[in-house]
Length: 191
Length: 336
Ligand code: HEM
Image (tube, rainbow over all chains, first blue to last red; front, side, top):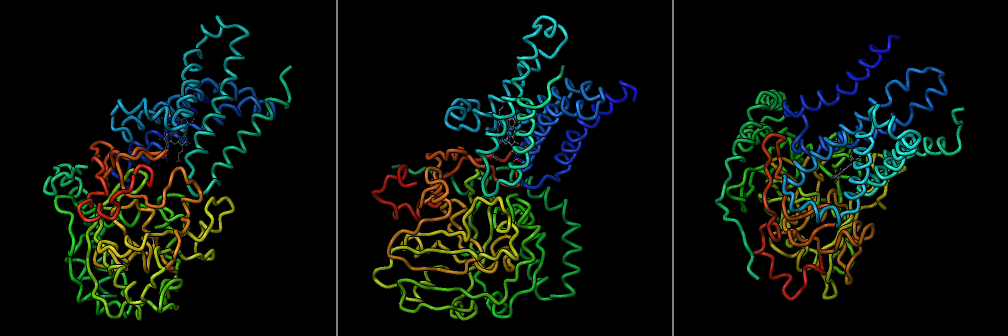
């Protein structure tokens, strides 16, 4: 497949949910607490994008198709975008823009701190995702970007702490995450 | 302590707009619903149509129909605050027996058979037994109570309930002198409750709740059988649920199958799962922060993305005048 077409298609696919949710919110289709629903969709989206981003290298190895790595940076940035919108909906819909509460929220609620940690990692990796940083950082760039695995662990713990009655969906995400981490630690290495 | 209550008459313009917008948007839907139901239950359809907009009519059990006709409407009100549209109150629920998501109860609960239903009353009472609902409630008059409903997740609604004071029922079964607490238990029916069947459920079913006897006997404490002028939708706890308006919503246990009068304080479901998060009392209190959610404010539903409807949470959910005396001398920060 032509490279630009593939990249552009992935871009559209990643953008689509955001447009759809915005449309739903605008039409009043998200139920009586739409801000909370948006927050949840965006958090879940960020987590799925994180898992997808980390799946690309193993996928490339399994399918022997080099197209996967072409979208790695893009998906990583989408993950940051979803997570940032997730953070913004938290500030808007749950904190009601009352920033004086943020400090207390961060230190009193471990799940907020964990989420924030995961977001900081995504921020750092996004800022260093350009070609310039890559050149500048040399070998360290790869090490730095392995922090995404730590981000994944923080995000999974973040989700674990807010479960109420059922951990079925958490098991699914954590299971995929565990496979990815084990593969990174013990799986096939690139030559 | 000075308890601050915002004037009841303080009505925000945002509330009015939200509700009218909601109602007009679904006027069409409600209209067709009523037409269809009107064919099946003519008297009920006109009844609900005149009282609340957008209510899906439902058949009334034979024992309840004459009581519904003699209901004392609006015995308590929440003046100046808009009633939450029926659709929101019946489609945005926590009822984990039917699944973990807010929409799960409305999706799955209709499978639950609620008629006939019997209630076990046991423990420290002179007249224990298994009672059919119609026998239990036969002497009582149905009352409508409009209450605020505050969820521990920091959202709230205003709901018109139909029911009987729990005190009337308890007096009827005659608690003994050693009864100091009341325990409640929800139906545990894996066949009809997919949340219970889940292999990843964290809750140890059945769901149990409890009140101190004086809380249970308080005139505000209601055993509800209906809302919005009709019987309870299953997802709202049909056929019989508790409503304790000054406590967080999880205390208002749904689809009750057992009420036990007890000499010692029962251990409730949430208390045993996370004692540092959920106390026995669970009185609405903006000054006691829950480990996950700040309780200082609440999102009054329906809330909008573009126009938020956030209001300060009131001590005892605005019922301090009525109930604060129950807790005289207690440290509500410790006994949360
Ligand atoms: C920036 C810091 C973050 C904050 C303040 C934050 C805050 C929250 C809040 C308040 C909730 C809802 C909790 C509830 O249900 O009561 C939530 C849910 C969630 N968050 Fe975050 N979060 C942050 C970062 C992240 C990141 C980086 C990810 C993933 C990459 C993430 C993934 C999720 C997921 C999956 C949920 C559950 C959604 C659901 O219920 O379906 N969060 N977050």
